[in-house]
Length: 120
Image 1 (tube, rainbow, N blue to C red):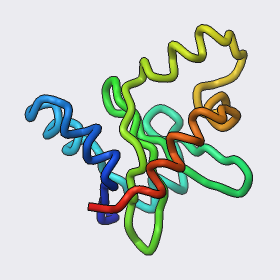
Image 2 (tube, helix red, strand yellow; image 1 turned 120 degrees about the vertical axis):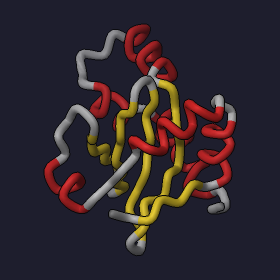
Image 3 (tube, rainbow, N blue to C red; image 1 turned 45 degrees about the horizontal axis):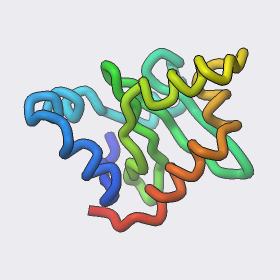
Image 4 (cartoon, rainbow, N blue to C red; image 1 turned 30 degrees about the horizontal axis):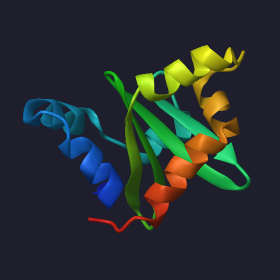
């Protein structure tokens, strides 16, 4: 298991949720090296672009987008699935969710904002 670190943006995103929903999401968000090696596709995914590697974890209707740094999981964004599923529907992209996100400049802008935010 890794230590999980939220940056300012992802911490703010999770704090907007009701307390019980926060606890439920945090309880389900467990990441091990084995998870990242096997990437079951249902819960975990990998998104790559221009040498940047992110992982995605699905929990209920939310997606944690994170990277592994120095033995820690750094959460850059916590987004509701509707944030991008609506985008995918409107753009009618014939790709899986992770593939479509890898190609989305808007998605990478959100991630870069998270990467540049202070860690809590």
